[in-house]
Image (cartoon, rainbow, N blue to C red; front, top):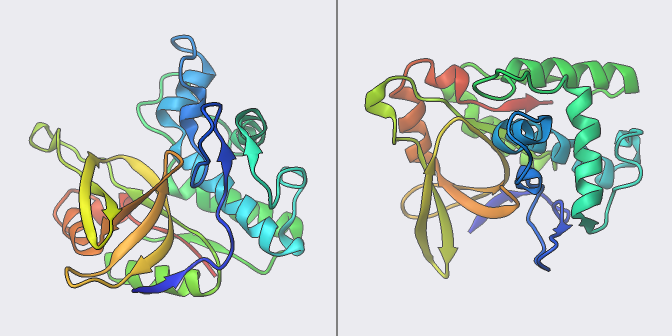
Length: 238
């Protein structure tokens, strides 16, 4: 049973292969030349995808959140090229990704750039990057009840013993949750919370697909790893 979720249609992109995505996908930049900005977008641009989708969703739900970057892309299915054009504008606003970067944007940069935009536009919203694990679940529900997508970071895991560890992404088949892959050092967007016997699941958008994360597994991950509750947290907007 879904106990919280966005009320509107989430971001949709018509892929060149004919499928409709669930959210944006930095994978649209796949195949770029080695060392190019587009290669960095594809490999390290998940935070930019999440940030851009957040702004596009807000603009589509309320005209007061419309900005020049979103005004041509709201409330419709975009083509891959349109989404890439929009993504590039958000990429520039966020300051891009440095050529020698080992990972993408920090949560603090997302916080600062969101608040800069909020002040520029006269929004009453303000963002804060969380650093305490105890508030993540409560604040996620709070934001979803206010129809605000939640940017969640799956933390980078340090040390060789954690090389192949991370959080499991699930697909839902009927009432069953099927493991798809394990990821770390990755931003996703929470669009809903579902109550299940095994504990709540976060419905998320990642790489243009709908996946699910078990909240108890995520909590175990962030509390069991170095800097887990700081690197693994949410962009709390209120």
